[in-house]
Image 1 (cartoon, rainbow over the protein chains, first blue to last red):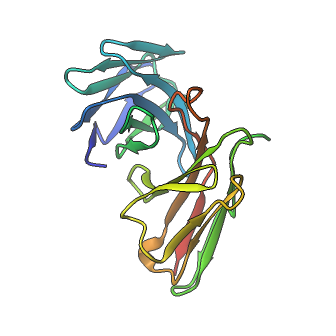
Image 2: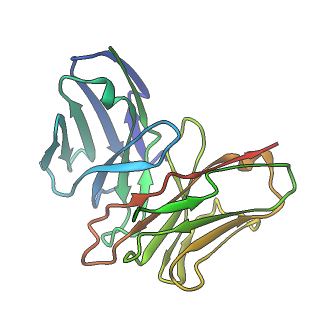
Length: 112
Length: 116
């Protein structure tokens, strides 16, 4: 969706390196979600951010929300081959969270 | 397995044929969503149900597409007179109702459609 722009579109990193993926919304964010998708499979929920300045971590993945800028970043520390996949940001488009609009995704490849 | 299940996982059909996909959500989830994902893109919202009521339908869903959830449990997505542009992964997701719904969607593995 053009409502959510993700950058970069794809990323190749050496195992052990850190990386950051960004997501920018053109509309007000009521909630920002990060999902991971293995190629050809369904999406797996990673985390949700709701408040400006909120930061959450799951294992070596940390996400932050800048509500004023309507942006979120996802940071992976010491990448591993298991981190490879497509990272998708999603946004709730009303406060009830009825539906989620997704960005185009960032394709991450980790070289061993 | 108590996750969202989709059937079939893969479908190859000829242009003009009808296809139907089935989604079984997690049993206590009253919300069910259909998304379509093409290569290199994120999932695009198609429609969603709360129980048996279809509450929203995307403009992406042409008249050839119809979704049902007759008893508020499983759902079907039918595509009539398929076109090559319908080739995509069709994803189903379910979620809890408010106030238990934090917005997290639980996705199935998807049904991949190839129209020849």
